[in-house]
Length: 121
Length: 265
Image 1 (cartoon, rainbow over the protein chains, first blue to last red):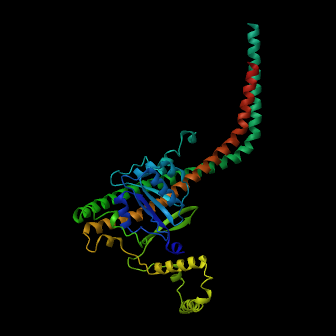
Image 2 (image 1 turned 90 degrees about the horizontal axis):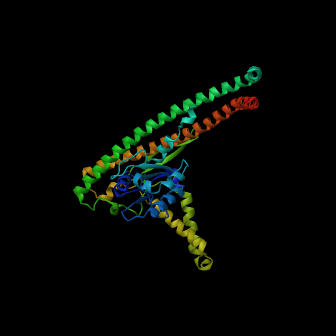
Image 3 (image 1 turned 135 degrees about the vertical axis):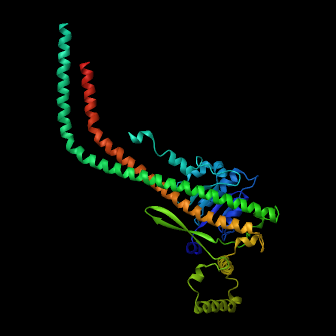
């Protein structure tokens, strides 16, 4: 009930600097089950862990937006492409090491395939 | 030579017959087509509008993403500066407060035109967390009732001690956890890194606060883009259906033409 009164959360999956930055921005929260809404991806974090965390964020109803570094989004592209619901919205953000590449973004890739030559006949 | 001229004449007759048949069929269809053509035009106009809207949203989206990237770059740069002045281990995940963190920035979801849009709202650091109990403004009566019931529990403790089952114990634990939440306040995350933090960290925080707002706007735009895409696809289906209705009669004539042509051949 507290959540519905205060709104939903923004979750973040990213490297240490991205998480630190967004937590400084005030999005970090620990819920009653002591589960955070952020995940710091270290060098030794496996793809399976990232995917598991991503899926757990998808399953939580107190999260409205999931921010994920594009280089980690690339690792779990299949999971991101499978998600078509408007909530939670998934947003690919640049990281400190990798600049944002619009050609890899799943939303913009969908946009690219929107207009085919057959439609204009 | 005589046979050839005869067959040429036959083909000519068949061709003229075909034209007549086509003319009659087209006249019959013309009335039906006039209505479907206007419908088709309407759908095409709507399609154009959707496409223009789609590209407008796409342009805004790319523009905002560019601004987000610039803002985040500035934020990363400031964090690095702060790390340089404070020490390499002083700005990182080890400093996060993972005990009673509450989000200062949260998102409200609104439904507009079939799409979900988001807007941020921020709490002031230092203010108390508003929970369900506080929203309802716990009155003095209910508070006294609670104390009375507690007293009753204490009075009847000896008699009912054995009756306390696991369920009630769990409920009591839940009550206790709620009490701890009430005392929780919104803390400024900057204080995780110390009281006198360098200016670079403050600037970095400001950059990331803007980045959060931009992320929320971008997420709304993305949802709008997806909704427009869906609308466009539906209209495209409608258009192809209308086109199919229009062409549904004409291909039949073409087929019959083909058959006739085959027969003549």
